[in-house]
Length: 305
Image 1: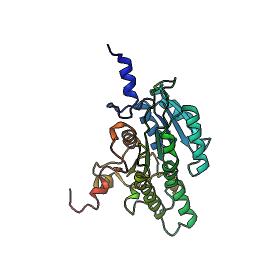
Image 2: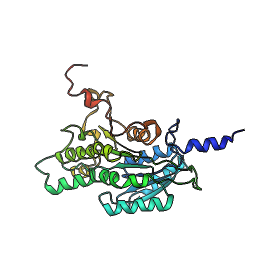
Image 3: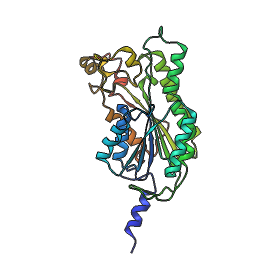
Image 4: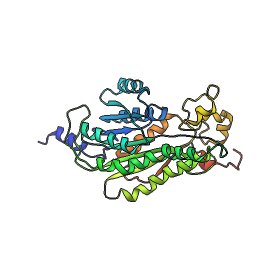
């Protein structure tokens, strides 16, 4: 009689589980203390990831809040707050080394970063443009260049919750960007140009990753309510944000120009990241999945509805 437990363990060795679970997976999520990044950490934990490196720029960022929130719901997923300079090649390599030294594997890399910059060309200088490219596109490039080598490493089953062996090379790189990467006029020139570059990383990555078992895809988000209150935020504060505040559009305008008639939620972006991390998306690479409530395909709206 066959050992049923062995059959279950064998099922875990493949990324293409029929239930979309991420048992055994070790993940990196950047921007993890921001609303979208935090939602992605929670979503990957809900899928059963073994460990998630919740990365953010500053050592003083609220990592404890992220860890406590996720562990309260999903105690079998280990969440590690990790200060990480996303614009640094050396810091990227150090993070990957730390992950491999601790877990022997890397499965998911989610790059969720963004810097709006100035909405005006007159107030955008070369330094502003460099900063936008460094924040919005360079982290995706570092992920494409360095994460795949770690993702192709195999490892036996570890001794920790949600552990499974990894006997096949595979991985998923997910770049969270903006619909500004697909057309102009979403915000300022620097944001639009650097968002286009991030999408270029994804599209060029398909050929670069041939034969590795690693996939790369983009999520381009539209109006996402990240909790920015325009009454309490100045322009400079908004320019440091990941997405344009959804409250820039009134509810009336959102109903008029967005197919689903509202702004999206961080959790709705995160669910797409969970899909791209899992075997549900096993034959998807180089794709741009637009999370904008249908706004970009409905506008400009020329037929009254």
